[in-house]
Image 1 (cartoon, rainbow, N blue to C red):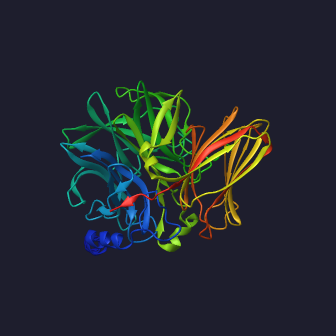
Image 2 (spheres, rainbow, N blue to C red; image 1 turned 45 degrees about the vertical axis):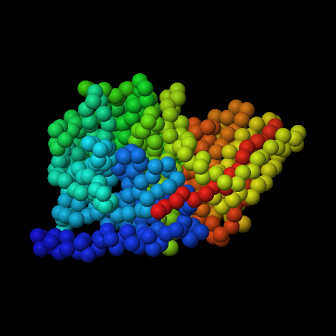
Image 3 (cartoon, one colour; image 1 turned 90 degrees about the horizontal axis):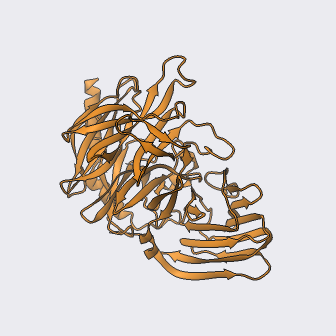
Length: 501
């Protein structure tokens, strides 16, 4: 076994060369393929996934994410890194953290970033498997160096705690009373007869001690005892007097108006006690109702909670058409989260307004409006407010030649449906959810080459998803209703690309 492990470590040295990977990135920039997104962060090749290590350090926002720079599957997990002062201008994507030793030879999995003594430090999950494919996990700190690589430090949490499986990962920090704690995604091993599932998702809390050790305090106590088999990517946030626990439960059964994605990303709002580890909370609510949103991570800077998510979904690589061209997935635009009346509202960061170029005003206020048509730039932002008038049913479509994605809304049932079945390539299906509309339907839509993000009712709900048009055509936006709408007004902007250098 030792011989095979040694051989694998030698092979890793050959496979992972920061210099070679970084050069390949530079050689493949800027993007030219019409499916590559222009104002979403992504890699020119390989598979990216969970955002990691979000932090503001020395005047720049640092964004890491999981990356397989070698193939287009969920293997060889490493970290890609970029930084930006303004969410418009980014440093060139680079390989920053990759498997090198016995602890992380089978993957550098998710983790967080924080600033200490003027340096950006990370805390991440190491993954290793033996010949029988049995997983061993560990958690370790690291420090970002000037040349862009993360210098690894000693392991501080060895293995998984008793009573929990080796699916134990995704550390994310938070503070209470000036002390640093870490929330960890975990999978509880249930005793026979204790639950309908052999395992259940949960979150464990660790307290950092002396900057080198972490002490297990216990499990976060919630009302959700049997709610999926794993809770990934926990974030514990504070909004004034309220606490929010964001997590990604896997294994929920789909319902008519919720839990329709393969895995969910959502939150609980309430009050969390670091002393009792109990959270008094309301119901679980989803952060996004689209097809392709997962693994969000949030960091706080200058009073803003800024979220970056993964536009993707575990285990659905076959739905991502760009894999045939050598790359998969994107990160969401950075979003600012606010808490209002027990719900999280999302909005793109204000800095993204600097991407706006050509502007088209939309003002339709005649007495007979039941149809509207506008050709959009290939990268665009659309803000529309529809005063519903007598109309009860609405269809908003993005038409790509003979293909289309359709969004319908019915005021009688308060149901919105997003339907991708009109596209020839990529994932299909529908997403159906409830949305309250009284007299005005408001939406703000960002259309990139394949990534679409829609903010409904001023960010009360969001839907993120991919489309893969067969042809390189500008989308046409159409809106029609069953009866006359009172008014449509808004603006369309052509958006510039973010800049990598």
